[in-house]
Image 1 (cartoon, protein in one colour):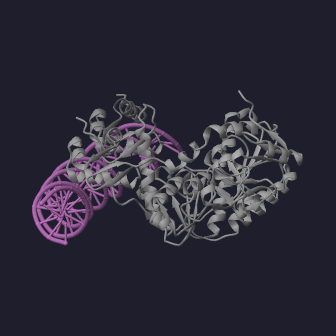
Image 2 (image 1 turned 135 degrees about the horizontal axis):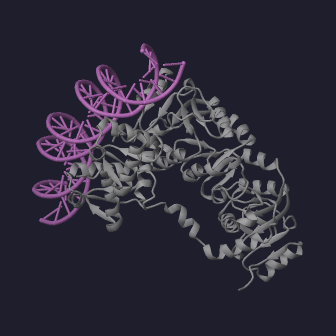
Image 3 (image 1 turned 120 degrees about the horizontal axis):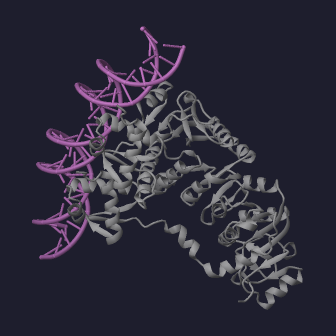
Length: 257
Length: 257
DNA sequence: CGAATCATGATTAATTTTGAGCAATTCAGA
DNA sequence: TCTGAATTGCTCAAAATTAATCATGATTCG
C-alpha cells in the first residue's frame, strides 16, 4: 500500500489552512486521519519552515497571502510578547545596547510604551529604525557607519571603531539563526563582526530570538553559548533549552499568556 | 466543528473596535460569546501589545503612530517644491551631504521619487529620518553621535570627528533663520558647529531655506554668505536676493507653473 | 542479514485556557 | 462627601491542549 508520504500530508495541511484561514488541531487530526501527536509534529515542522504560525489550540498560515492582514498582526503579537519579556532584563539607569533588525525594533516599540523605565536609560544602537522609534524617549546614541540595505543597520570600520570606545551594561542582540553546536549566527559577516565587538564591551549579553531560529545552521558565528547570559524566546524546545542551560544561560519566556 | 481560536478572537476584538471606535466590556463579552473574565484577559493582552487602550468600562483602539506622520504632513506643499528645486543642483555620481531636519527630509523624499539619479549618488547624513527615508535607495552613510531630541539629528564629538574624515561634493544645508547681515543661523550651538565643519569639508554648499527664514535674527551663525554657492528658496524678497547675490551666491526658485 | 534510524501512535505529565466566586476599586448621582 | 451599583483584579478548579517519553513497526544503510 502506498500510504501518503509525510510531505504530502504537510501540503494538505497548507491547503486546508489556505481554505479556512485557521484551524484547530483536533479538526486537522480528524481531517488527516492520523494521531494528534503526528499532527502536532507536522505543525512543528511547518512552523520551522516559516510557513505557518502555531498557537494554542491550532494554527494559521504565516503569510498574509489571502488578504488577511491579521496574520501579520499575529506574527507581530508574538514579537511584541518577546520584546516585552526582554524588557524584564533591563534595570533603570543602565546603558543598553540595542541591536538592529526587526526584533530589536519591536523591543524599541515596547520601550516606547514604558516611558518610566525608558527615561532612565541611555540607549546605544546601530539600527536606524530603532533610533527612529526611540527618538526623544531617552538619551540616545547612534553608531555611525554605512547603511546595510535591508536591515536598516549601520556597519563598517567607523561603526566598529565607535562601538569599541564605550562600555555597555546590557546588550540585547538578535540573530539570523542558532546553530545547536556553535551558537548564534548571522548571515552577514560584517554584522557578525560588529556583534562580537559589542559583546566584548558589554557586561551582560542577552540573545533575543524566537524559536524558529533554532536549528538551521547559519553562516557567521558571533558568540559562543558561554558568552551569553540570557536567552529570550517565545518558546524553548527541550533540546534548545538544554543546550543553553548547559552553558549557564538563563532562558526567559513570556509568562502571561 | 471548528471553534474559533483565541488569536482569532483577539483579531475580532480589533475589528469590532475599528468599526465602533470604542466599546464597553459588557458589549464585547456579549458579542464574543465568552465570559467577562476572558474578555478582560483578551483586552489585557491587546493592551500589552500596544494595540488598544483600556479604560474603566471598556476599551478603544490605540492612536496609531501619529507623532511621526503629523510632523511629516506639516508644510508639505511648499517644501516639496523647494526640495524638487534642490535636486537640480545634484549631479550624478556625486557624494552629497544631506543635513538633518524637516527640510532635508523632504529632499530625501524627493530623491526617493527619482531613483535614476539617486542610485548613482553616495549620500551622507546625520539625520535619522533622512536615513530612514533613503534606506536602500543608494549607498548611504550615517554619521554617529548623540540624538538631539526633536530634530532627529545626530551630534556630538563623535559626529564632528567622523564628519571631518571625509569630503563631500555638495552639502545641502538647512537653517533656523537667516540673519540679513551675518548669514544663516541655527538655534542649537552644537548643530551649528557641525554644519560649519561639514561646510569646511565640502566643495560646494547650498542653503535650502524658505522665505520665512529671512529676517529674524538667530542664535549661532554657522556660515558666512560667501561660503555659500547657492540658495534654494520658494521665494526671494528683493533685499534678500540682493544680499545673497552681493556675495556671489546663486539664487534658485521653483519655476512657476 | 543485522543494526541503526525514522515515523508513528499511545501514555502520562505539564501547561494553558477558561469560567466562577469574591474582595477591592471606580464611577455616578444625591 | 457619601452610598450603591458596576467594574475590575485576583485566586481557584475544571477542561482542553500540548510536550515529553517510550514502544512498535517500517525503512535505510553498511
